[in-house]
Length: 432
Image (cartoon, rainbow, N blue to C red):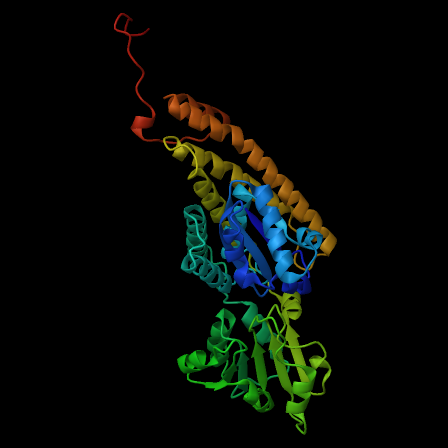
């Protein structure tokens, strides 16, 4: 089961508050000894998702909401309204889509797969994974690689970072521009290479969590401590902030003091969900602030063909993963049936998805239709999946294969031992 809030359906300020205490959430859920046996938390600059392994989804949902409420000080009702629940195939489909870049603010961006990988490794490191969760995240990462190599999705190299830097083109001459990085995580690593590619001089890094030194040594730049932060801001043409900490780093007072007496402009890019740059900084003379809202408003689209191909790959991967929990001997047949239904589902979902820039009401309506279609597909597949198990156990695989061939035109070969030859009556004639 998963609980999901993202840029698609929630204000970034709500996402910011939900993530307070995210580092300890998985450990708390497992230590409580309730219905959650494993948990992975995925917090990024524009989404907050919690994946849990449980045999009681409703109880687990209440436990997750209560834990987030304790950490964030939000009312449980607010959290419940903010986080959409997914179960079984829906949760699998969502994670695979997210990891493949299909749900990103910049569709097809590759940064998200690295963030999912780190969330998986973090849960593994702290013994918060169950075998089922481990399989799920491995499948998501594997699917992401297939999408990247097979569809051309994301080959433009567009990402949250590149779009933000494109927006900064209006105020920054990149050749030799002096850059201060705030933060040392995945976005910071990506930003260094992208900034160098534009000719910028990445001069220094500041980390609110105290990890600047290691990052600085790795990239051959200066590490800045709190006492030196104001001077680093003063010397910068661009500040790229993405720390994701829970405290504001650059206040109006600090930036105003750093800028005192300067006539040169400065551009501040804030891609941290927990904003590194306080409101009001952008009102200072000579200061331009670019945030996640700006990136979302200017995110480019990807080709319809690449997106459709990626969605098809994800649908097939969901079918294969879900069947891993079912009966063995008719696996190929059930997988083929699930692929058939999920393929039809994805085509219908694509028809109702609103275009980029659509009104929130249209987005909400499309989300409701998509969830209804997914529930319908899940219900449609339930009985054939159960019947596959029953027929396999009864040695009647041939009848099942003939039925799906007649009904759906699906022709599947299964292992010989799944379809035993009929017993021959010694007294019967050759044509009886």
